[in-house]
Amino acid sequence: MNEKFEHLIARAAQLVDRIEAILPQPLGAPDWNASIAWRYRKRSSGHGSLEPVKHVAVIRLDDLKEIEPQKEKIQRNTRQFVEGHPANNVLLTGARGTGKSSLIKACLNEYAPQGLRLIEVDKADLVDLPDIVDVCAPRAEKFIVFCDDLSFEEGEAGYKALKSILDGSVAAATPNVLIYATSNRRHLLPEYMKENLTYTHTEDGEVHPGEVVEEKISLSERFGLWVSFYPFSQDEYLAICAQWLSHFKVPTDAITAARPEALVWALERGSRSGRVAYQFARDYAGRHE
Image 1 (cartoon, rainbow, N blue to C red):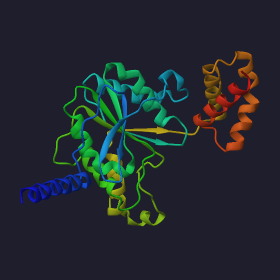
Image 2 (cartoon, helix red, strand yellow):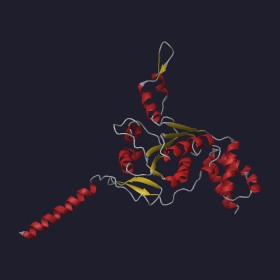
Image 3 (cartoon, rainbow, N blue to C red):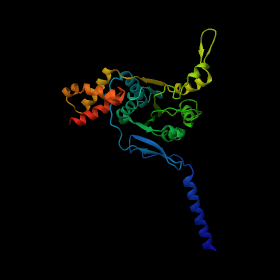
Image 4 (tube, one colour):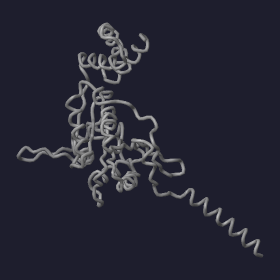
């Protein structure tokens, strides 16, 4: 009888272990000394974890050209944050390939020695943002939660989670966490022509958006700092190409000679973005070593 009872207890313990394995678990703190950046990943089991980024992109503020006004705003806000002064959540919007995400990575490298850390979170995982904030809250470091290429479709769960954590939750804002997001959309949600019909006009000429438009504007308005990026002119594009060619140790005379090739490269890709300039410089430097 005792053997049967002990066997039953052992089977029950195994069953409990299996049930616990599939139940949602509280987010655990990672080894904060493993890196200066982490990615939040959620497994098929529903468990989330913070995984250290072993090879952080080596990009510096001086590497980024032709975006000086944007750089000054982001750097100033980040410096205030790191130094313990009031700072804002940031939304970086505009043309693709103009340096939005690169600028955030460059700020991380600039201020990591002063305690700045970064956690990258995919749009689909923003529903777990409160758990991530709770794990970071007791730490002395300053954390940027980074959401790249952020946009939502109607009814996505992450939209309301982000809206709540930015401004509107009953919980107080955590002073060592800010959200930096990049997007090609100013208001993060698709906009349709028919929504213009919901605007109303008062007798004194004021214009008031309808409820649908108000809802779309409300999320972007909760970011305290908006920074816009614009397509580069031909001269700006060539200046960025020259900077990256110099970065790859291409001689000055070769940089001048590369201008026609740089223009053809951009024409073939239909874009004069900073990303295209960087890709051209890598190709050119690789071919002429």
